[in-house]
Amino acid sequence: MSQDFTGKVAFVTGGASGIGAAVARQLAARGAKVVVADLKLEPAQKLVDEIVAAGGLATAVAVDVGQPEQVEKAIQFAVDTYGGLHLAVNNAGIGGVAKPTADYTLEEWRNVVEIDLNSVFYSTKYEIPALLASGGGAIVNMASILGTNGFASAPAYVSSKHGVVGLTKATAIDYAKQGIRVNAVGPGFIETPLLGDNMDSEAIKGLRGLHPMGRLGTADEVAALTLFLLSDDASFITGSYHLVDGGYAAQ
Ligand code: NAI
Image 1 (cartoon, rainbow, N blue to C red):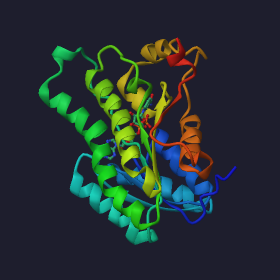
Image 2 (image 1 turned 120 degrees about the vertical axis):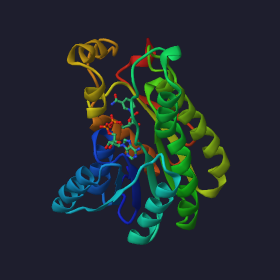
Image 3 (image 1 turned 180 degrees about the horizontal axis):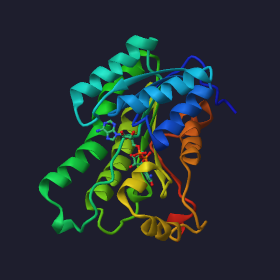
Image 4 (image 1 turned 45 degrees about the vertical axis):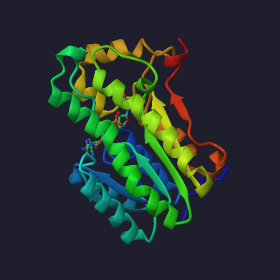
């Protein structure tokens, strides 16, 4: 196993909560210098304090991933703070309102696509030059099981996550010979505030039943796959989409 990230600089969007926070914690515990980038600076700083208290290295930066200029600045901040960029996890995302396609307003549609798909392009666009300047590295884009399956009343989210899988493949091909690997992770339903904020507890119970394992996943289980893909253990893996879904897509 080569999951020692000592000396590596990692940029994690949506790093203040849920899956992003688990990724940030696990990366820091394995020696990476982690930039926790999030819309919400206070919880991001709280996580950084926790990581530093545990002996890790991390710093927080405020960013709205839907604003390309902010994304560019946040990535430059990471490079300026730690001297380069080797790992990026484009993870920030939102669920969007639950309603069928024709009921989506243009604004609702555009907002979800902006945060869940366009943001991954913005991040990738500015991460690639920094990764190249640092001698290469790895990107993981947080898609979803809904990057391959459909789901009721989630047209913008499903479309965005399918788009993230496509962007992952296209980018991986473009930079495969230049030492940058790009992969996507497809979690099933995971116990995080994103689910809790969008669904009542009855709906969450129903989701458990959709997974053959009969439960939701944890943020740490998604982080474990993410770290594998970021690590040298995954040195021949690029342009692919990896599920961590308790069997959801096997049905
Ligand atoms: P979460 O709600 O716990 O965390 C998301 C983080 O992203 C929050 O800290 C939030 O402040 C941040 N964020 C939201 N909008 C932002 C913006 N415009 N700019 C910067 N940061 C922003 O959510 P969770 O569950 O950890 O989700 C992380 C990723 O995993 C998302 O892309 C989500 O779509 C994906 N995912 C989640 C699943 C789940 O069941 N929880 C399942 C499959 C994928």
